Image (cartoon, rainbow, N blue to C red; front, side, top):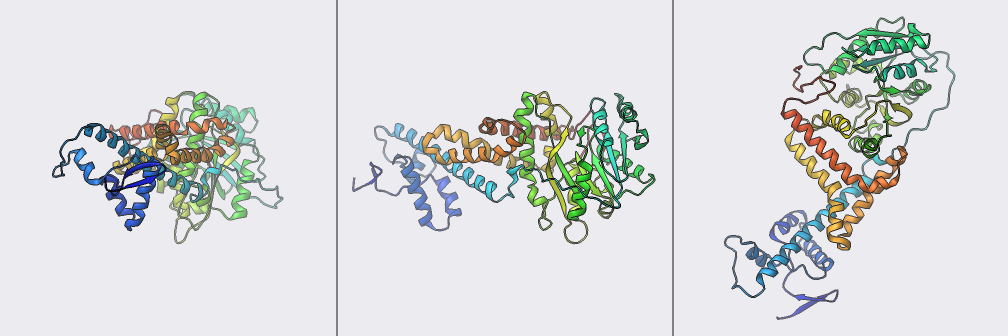
Length: 479
């Protein structure tokens, strides 16, 4: 051998160290200067203790590529070829771990601090001569088990202004309307509640938005003109000062929409395992700080609790402008924020005390919640689905796999896994769950990846948007 190069106590041939052609070509495109690529190759060589000796031509010969030079067989060539293959796999895993770590650095420091999960500080009580009128619109479909508590929490609001609750019974078969009326009678205020029956669902409308549109229409016939509409769900429990806080914040900050991501129930095993991640992934898609910044295009809201300025809704085209949307809350937020010229201020926070009353006692119920709209979020695109599955694999699944396979040599994977745990910890704290759940986020992400793919399969089978025995077709056809 003409000469040797000693690195970290290991002796290796002095011929140029190069990645396999597939990896080398990719990095030549990313790193325009050859010197940078050579430094990376030497660094990987050093990390694997000098064992990553993958000459370009030798690798082509081992791989059996047509036209590659084929030296005469020598004793041990098969073993060396197998070893080189393992080294190639190790190099690819190492580079994937580096990419995952880079992405996590971006998520932690350049994604609006989405992981903080910090409720807004409550505003100090104030005294006014007059408060704006508010009407709550509650669409309900087979919610008899929870609507009484939801209606009770609304009727017990300490809001000093005019406030009326409108429940729209969307063809329920379980006595939802009667349960709502009974709650108002129990509080001796039946005059503050109106229950109407939804008309048949027309083509081109999603069920929830159709029910909301009729509730908003009914609000026009109240004895006062509501300045705000509280769009809330039939399974949400509100603290007594919730409406007052929402109106005060909307007025003080001149917001056209103020929304709360309510605290979902987190008691059963499957809720503890999967629910905090649901809000975590939502916040990653719609960083709250970006939503709250009028200069940022990001718009999002949580449909369980949205206070909307009525004039802003009308300027945005009314509720009918989102009539076919399955992700109606974020679509409405985008309409309001981007209406007309410029961008209008909206706000989204995690709730301190507003809660969801709906239990998710099995993984199947959470799966259905995700699968209902996951493919809609991807605009029914197979390419976006493939990109999402690949991205989730690199960001969440690769770090623990590479860390376990490469051990200490896969230190970027360990750092990426640690960054993942640090990002997830505030959400676990918000849900009062142990931080020991954080290392299992990759497994939880695998569940969400599977549900997202399942959402696409449902759509391709003609069952997209299925919810409570009703299928919503994205093209505007009603099934």
